Image (tube, rainbow, N blue to C red; front, side, top):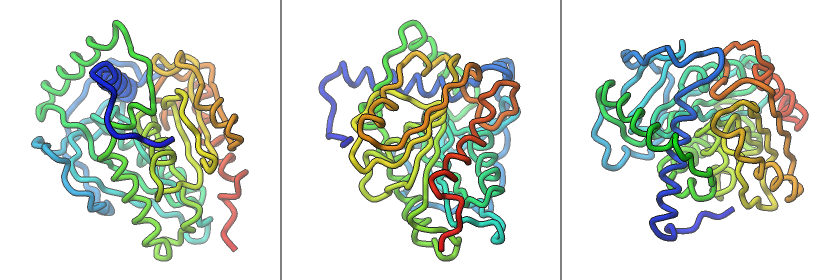
Amino acid sequence: MRITKGLAGRARKARVTGCLAIAAAACIVPTGAHAQTDRMTQIAMPAQPNAIELGTGPLPGATAPEAWHSQYGSVFARNVTVATLTPFLPDPAKATGAAVVVAPGGGFRTLSMQNEGWDVARALAAKGVAAFVLKYRLNPTPADMPGFERSMREMFSGTAARPPRMEPQEVMKGLAPQIADARAAFALIRRRAAEWHVDPDRIGMVGFSAGGMLTLATALAVEDAKPAFIGDIYGPLGAVTVPADAPPLFAALAADDPFFASGGIGLIDNWRAAKRPAEFHLYEQGGHGFGMYPKETTSTGWFDAFVRWIGMHGMLKPAK
């Protein structure tokens, strides 16, 4: 896939806007065991002593400061204007040399930093894999919490009646800042690979919902990042053009996902048609946004399946 410049008219722009709105809805409203009764509560910005600024600059035109809130027993960031990368390094005695960039979801309006970021990274580090949580820049939202909640309600009301078809290749055209952040993350890890005991050729990426979209964009539309493998966890599975050198793909989705379960699996079909490695897990239940939340559904097993999969591809064997 190659991203071309510009969009063909207002109709296509409307589809892109709608797709991003659906992605936002999908990432912000976990379904299933974590009901929607847990209100957003503003919190102080957590200490992030190990976060490294990526040097991609402030988000152009942004005025609201970065803000955080708690919801669903987790924490979220929004109005991120400066991208950072936070390393979670394994015990040197267990380190495999493999690494993963972790991209939380949130519809490019917020980031599920705990459930889809730090908790994933800690679990990977426990398996001997260096993990790096990418806090990428976000589309601006109202600075105050009531204004943010109101903007989300308005977005939902505008898309719920007729959700547009998710078209990943078109949506990716609106992700220039986020793609730049992902590129910078890969460049930083390779630059400090010796210090972090990482094999520069064994750096993958896993993303959740909108983070899955960013993962696909990084793998398919960026010439220099070149992730060794990618994971798309309850992200879009619409058809894309798959290049001959596409990395191995792991995808997971729940059949009762209210946003992406009915959109087909063109992504998987295209990957297989291009004769590139692909593994797809369709869980009977799990809803959307399950991440690392403990649930009784089999979707909770996605992480162990993902680790076994990267192990099958030689990522858990220390480099010789």
